[in-house]
Amino acid sequence: MRMWLPLFFFSFLLTQGFSAPQFTKCSKTLRNLLTPKQDTSVELEIENTDPILSLLTTTDGTLAPLLPPKPGFSFFSFKLPPSFGSEFQGWSWERLAQEPWDNLNNHQKRLFLTWVTARKTTPFFQDREVPGIRFKDRASLTFKKSTEFLGKQYEPGNHEIDISTLFRKVEYGTPNQNPNMLELHFRTHRPSGDVSSGARIFLEGIDVANTHQHVHVVTPLNIKRFQEEGQLRSVMFTDLYRRANLILEMMSIVEERFKGITVRRSGNVVFWDNLTPEKLNNVFDHLEKSRTLGRQPPLGTVAKMAFVGFRGADTYDDPSLVGFEIRGISQGSNPDYIRKYLNTLQWALTQDHFGVTPTEMKEWMDSQPKSEQLDMGSTWYNQPWEVLKTNGVGHRFEELIEPYFRKHFFNLEENRELKMLLHNWSNDPLLFNKPKLLKHIRRKQEEALERLNEGKTSHQRIVSDFLIQSGIYGIFTRSLGQ
Image 1 (spheres, one colour):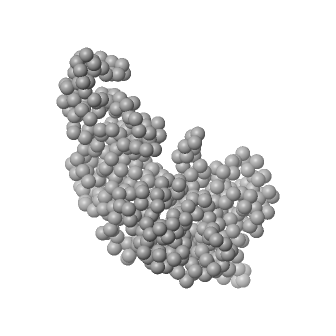
Image 2: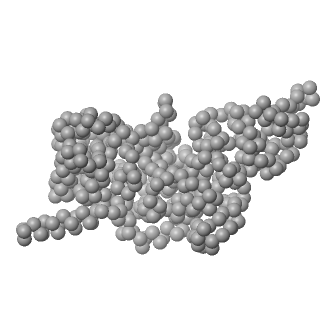
Image 3: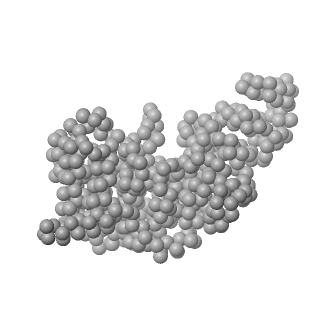
């Protein structure tokens, strides 16, 4: 009995040490983020319900911006679409153009939104703005309890709040450009976690259900610094981006009611996906090209689709910026953890070493196969299953995982988190030089695979336990704040 006590105590400490996100290490530094240098923008894809509609107006407050051009001659009659029925029957173009938007009821407003959308000639992926529509300057928010909103304390009750600088353009939320689904841009100059919380509190204040968020955390890309430090700097920045993705994925597995990491598409349009090795290499290539050219080339959306997407200067209104687009914030995400994650990520983007020292990263680079192009994608767990079969525990794939999926009718690509149980973590820049820890991780992988084969525990719980007990969860979350 006495022999087992030290082992039990060590195991308890190891599990407890890695059982929750460790964002507290940089808590003192986070106070410096009260005055960040850049705005944070939160995108809210949301149904255009009556409370949302009440926030909108036209660019001049009348119906004129929503009308087609005035007929040039009187014999060209002006007619509204049949969907308007008898409403506004007999109204001239001039009378409609002078009518205040706020004189309309919600049904009539929706008719005009549908009509202006039908006449829109630019496609969604070229121009997403709803023609002629903007946000009002003020909104009425109701707080049920004392509430802090963007640094100001509000007592319970009704409050008229200036939103003229908070909301920007009004966009369609889906490629079919249905005005009943919008994307709102909530943007202000505060710490990114506070802006995310502010967007959620705003929706509560207008009695609208919380929704998922896309949060843009931006930073200047100091290309001169990249040129001075060479490829090492590109590797360090790319690895920060990789870890930002992994941490958010792990948080969704451990902290939320997890549904599996997968891709969601309709035809050729991908609505949701997680990071792939190719996209990680796209980010690295963009940084290397920027270093070589002395400026950022267009990046577009090639690295957008992930829990944390990567956006270049062509996305933003400042050519010096790059951004992490945090897309994996679901409706059910823990708001406290998300706030800490976002604030810590914003802080990490201002640091010199991004959580892995230059010495360690140089050592990792030297350990990589000699080739013309460094393969950053090899560090990411979401590899093709055929690759995962060859990495040491992959032989258990045919023995354990394939029969398990056949038995339970699961689709491999709808449960990509299981790849973490087969991934070779020994090439990870954060772990490669820690042989004892890697041995422990491998043992926990094998235990997780055995549990999976037994079929007594959900695979979500098995992956969650693996991330905690292996130490990976705590190690990676702490790295963000070091």
